Length: 228
Image (cartoon, rainbow, N blue to C red; front, side, top):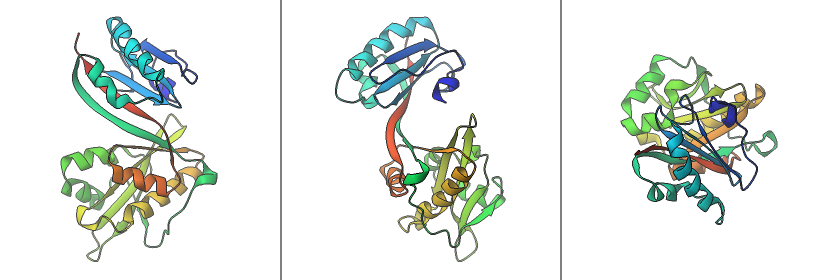
């Protein structure tokens, strides 16, 4: 899946391997940036032009030869103008799924106005982190006493392989397990459709929700805007 998102012919390397390719149209990162994905102690990276292959590959090789792969240290080893991430990548096999209660969870269209109102009501960074504006599934919601949506989850299908999860809870309703409930419903829907649930997150609170559902962290993703 990640290799196909590079948008050039490439194979994800085996454990301990590093592959860096020129891919101007890569979907691993914003246009003109370098995208890095580490999974199971192997790394695939894309760069917008050939002059960045050597510096990035050398920095990554030094990382892989140490214990594990910590992409968080990568920006300090390169001339970086801007950074996005790193975010952890977690995946869930059906037999590991720990479902939460689905009582009170309803399904509405992804573009439902109540979902849009929740997204608009939270800080910009929370809305962007959730990625709810990109889901292709239905939106699975829990409503509050006033019938407003206070928690929502859904997913976006990635190349018909993975279901990329998106979850958001209104700030005043956090800490009540609502994110786990709506996310559990979205995960169950994705598994029923034959997709591999994928959870990408930076905040520890989001990672805790994923672990509670049975997700296991397999790696991380980082985007870099490198100086020439």
